[in-house]
Length: 224
Image 1: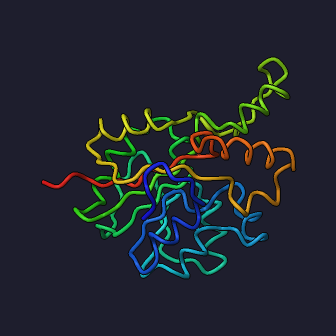
Image 2: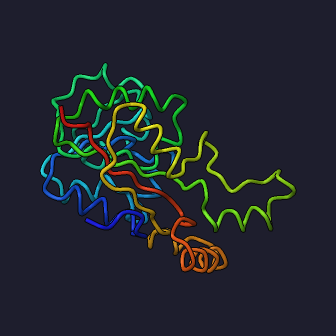
């Protein structure tokens, strides 16, 4: 495992931790970009199907689930990520992956309460999310933000997280962080980024990894 606060590639870490394990993938469809992700061969759920011992997925977007099922995916459940305790799943899982979804939630505390019901003593929960202090976005927003009117943010995001805010949220809900890391702009995203954004990112992370694209918390429930 990497040292805390290392700069890593998000997908490499996820694959490393999920290989050969029973995995629950939350927000698995990447809807409404499911079809686009399948076309450019970047849909994470398909990669997890290849490497995990057993894989389940949960998503609230039935349209995205239908797309995955039409491509042969199995064991995908329609469910509310803020009401996970209501789902009938055979846990616990070795790994629960919450990738790029906590920033979409209205009530992240309800999510963390619910996901704990699917965890055992040895389960690890991987949370990845956009970094509140991403240097690349700061620069872009400063130059192209139109005095605050234009913000480079996903239209469905309702929150940003940093080391301190994500750590506090997890601790308040009884989680122990094993590792906290920063993730760089993914190789799969560099191909689609504007060239000057990639340069801005590379300059920022060369000086400080805490200006990276996103953050990762690898955590678990505390031992009794």
